[in-house]
Image (cartoon, rainbow, N blue to C red; front, top):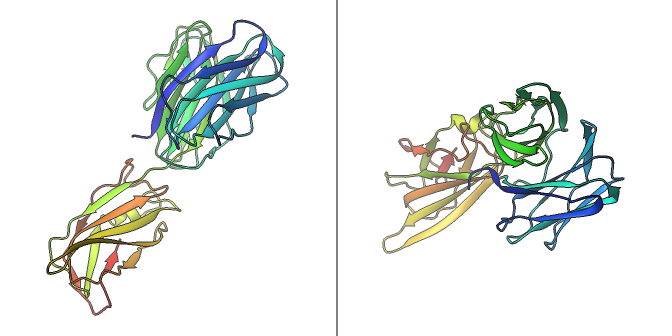
Amino acid sequence: MALGFVQGTFANSTGAGTVLAKAFSVSVTAGDLLVALVQTPTTAGGMTLTDNMTGNSWSAVTQVTIGGEVIYRSEVIATSTGSVTITATANTSVGFINLYIGEWNIGGHALARDVNDVTGSDAGTSFASASITTTNNPDILICWYSNNGSLTGLSSGWTQNVYDTPNGNGYASAVVTTAAAYQLTATQPGGGDVSVIYAYKATTSGTININATVPLTPDTVLTLTPQLALKTPVGILPGTVLSFGAQLQQPDTIAITSATIQTLTPGVLEQMIAPFPIQNILALTANVTGPTLLSGANAPTPATVVTPRPRNIHGPQIYI
């Protein structure tokens, strides 16, 4: 599944109180990011977020005050796949509680806020959130807003995910693949708005398929392309791991084996001596995992094998 928004919904209290709960309409997926945003008219003396899944531990709640109202935020990584109900509990009774929840695929990244949230406000029919500057590649951006109507003409990459028509609140999100400054702009019916924008770290993974059509001996060096995508700081991030799987041919047997190299480093031409005790390799597959981003895509692009070069080494040596 592609990075980004999966599902979302909201709930409104019918009056003053301390507790409000809302269930997702379909099961959430283990490893996905769950975010809860809670709006109250005044400070609630603190807010606690919980759910019905075993092992979920919600992060410390943060709060901002915008437009005279308070927005609480917390999040968790789903520990398992299943039905989830999220409950917001205020420390003291407030006039109303509005609960907005969402699920995002972040590619298996551990829970990590990228940078501090930022708030903004506008008047008239032009909507513009404050600008947030990310440090990770890629990030999930979430912008909660309160205005007088559903947004249209959202800036490139942004999608309005949930809109609460009775209360004039909603949120939009985007996946960004370069560390830079971002904001949500759009058109609204009018009357002004307030907003807060959040950033979460995500990751991408994928597979590079390498077809070796030339018989490879233990003294063969393979040079794999594209090297540039793996050598540039933009193309590969710290923490990325590359593992090789090889389909091997013996006179009467085809076997599968694999070897894993060290974590890749930006700007470094990595190499691996593969412990393949076979003289002919039918095909190679390189699996890239971790916070990698190749050529700005969510999955690495195919690599090809150039002409092998003989070399006097003990086993095939593979450059990537």
